[in-house]
Image 1 (cartoon, one colour):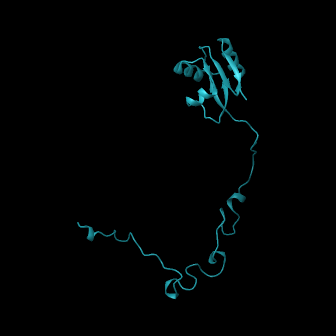
Image 2 (cartoon, one colour):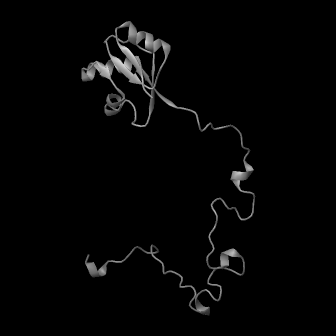
Image 3 (cartoon, rainbow, N blue to C red):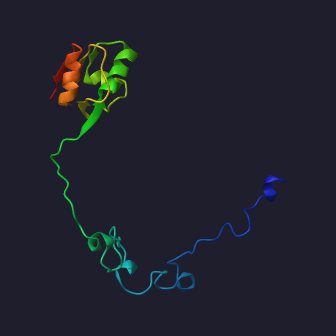
Length: 148
């Protein structure tokens, strides 16, 4: 095998149709057909256009409601806080600590829930607390601080 003998596999390449170069290469319409928007320059198909048929977006029934003002919280349970406090050996779990350890994202709002058991005395910062979580934290001598 030599470089000058190499060629592509049979049928893998084909020559492009040279349009708009006279009658012999696609004729006067250059493969666009006669009349209509698609035959004209500057034509751009709209997203979801189905050739005049009622588009799917408009055929499908709409229902439900999305409240733009709803606050979504990332739930963090006491057992996760207990494990984190043990792992990094700290008694202050701020939002920054939770973000740095990958428990929550930096833009998440955090709500502490009461699943699990908290043994360590820790002060916890979060945007919201369930009542059972607050009671569990304060039972072992920690503090639950709500942040805005």
